[in-house]
Image 1: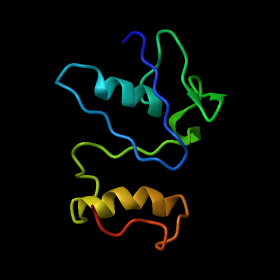
Image 2: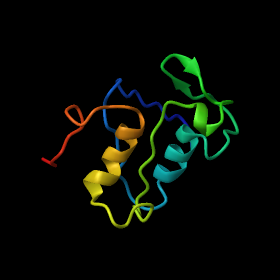
Image 3: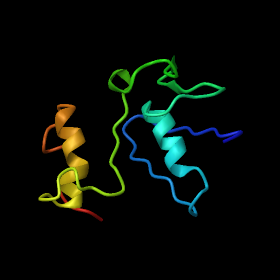
Length: 97
């Protein structure tokens, strides 16, 4: 990957769309800390995150195959990360639009 720059505002949901092999998964894995950078930097909330382990980054990941919780709906799988963060049910969206 070369020349990638992404700005996501606090509280926004973000997804990447593109053809197979375009680097979507690699980019998201780098942001989450599941892969190591060979160059460049990742900054989260103005702080250098490139050297932080995944559990110290303020990033949530919802995998394309949501088999992590196959008994739950897609919405409940997405909302789970918000619940773990302590966001109450009134704030968590309960229906898709």
